Image 1 (spheres, rainbow, N blue to C red):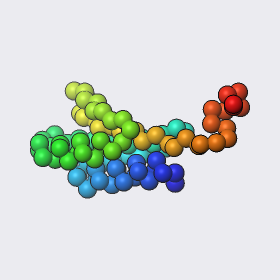
Image 2 (image 1 turned 120 degrees about the vertical axis):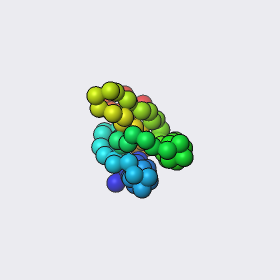
Image 3 (image 1 turned 90 degrees about the vertical axis):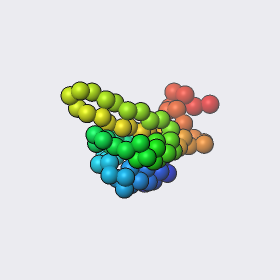
Image 4 (image 1 turned 30 degrees about the vertical axis):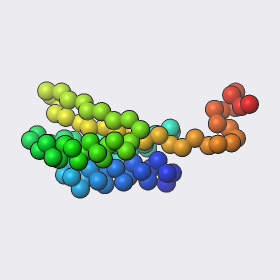
Length: 92
């Protein structure tokens, strides 16, 4: 698993420990983490959750009246330092 996957897995594990069910999804350039946020999460738990997702490259909260609240985070994959970085048409 790439370094981003290990980092994303660690974030997901910590969120699960805090009681948030999580999902990981691998993409070509990043790994995404989603967690359902239960109603009534205490302010202390929110602080812990924010500390965890602050380790990601990006994060946010999607809240709707139909689907509740979903916390998301993205960890980018590391870019190779040499070789075919941007594809065949973009090599230097």
